[in-house]
Picture 1 (cartoon, one colour):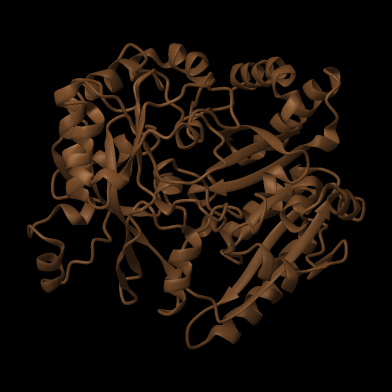
Picture 2 (tube, rainbow, N blue to C red):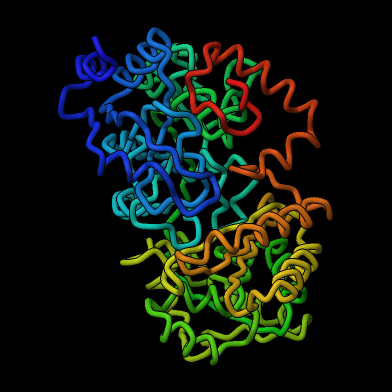
Length: 489
């Protein structure tokens, strides 16, 4: 029997596709991972079907590429690196398995998007931690498992947050639960009867498989569900802005605001990314950009609970006092954009229509890495200088600076807006800039695509132990081969 017929026996004929148009949608993305067309797409509907698919892959030497978010995709981790791969499309697994307000936790399957989750959390007075304006079909699990930064850094204690427990089907076909979901009772329901809420990230054993699986591009297994920590939905909320000619003073102020826990949403963007978040056409983007200062600190002040208004008022008063110390003015309006408009369009919202990174030119190439917050401005200046010398205009580069781990690190995102017919000619500058930033100390913690060859030779000891773990959890190398430091599989 063929692989297609065997897979159809597991999940049904309608959930296995070899339609060329369907396959083409998974063959490439907005990255430099190249183009490889998969052989099949399977769409399992539950963890048992996932486990059966992985066991069959081991039996028939199939290569599996797990995908949970819809297009457009940007990083190459879901583009097959080998011919004949099978895409495991998890987008049909849409269950929100549990929401518990008392413990501020929710359990979701891979197909649940941020918009779908927040709609349900609203009913419980809770909120999820959103990345910056995710696309409408962005999987919650996809974002969290790849450690994408979220916009409320005061709740970011670890790069793996807000994931607590999870269930994985490992590459060898076995199932593993992590965090509080690992026990001691056998089922989640039995755990809850004794007060368990699957909220703790620590498991009963010393090993934390979640840390191995996160950021691995699906190289160790497939995540069936996660439990994630949520927070209370604000009852009083307002967005404030501060402008500057450089990101450095804004980052310094933002770190102080974070230390005092005055703000929820807190990040710095340049005028181009700010405009792209709010406007949907190139003309409107440029028109708004002309009204804005070059750099903008975006901060949300929130009040929750019984004393929400009192909490909100004292934070606003303290915020204004602290901003004055840095020579900044935190205002509820900037460039004609009000804080209430920004709140309604961007905060805890998915991008409507065309994804905001594709609105200006139709394509976008991303460079992102981690750095100490006080060094972020220097890396941005280095990248902009390299672009200028190469003839790539600064007004086509968006920047997003997001602190995490209580201000210990900063995600530095550079968005190069290019037209679809310019992507090939832009590739040399993309690689030269990546290499220069890396050599200058930028930490590429998520080395997708061509970055892998740049990063892993520098960390050979880590790569050695990662390959040892790969041999344990995925001995036949069926999971997303050719990615990261596992290219021999």
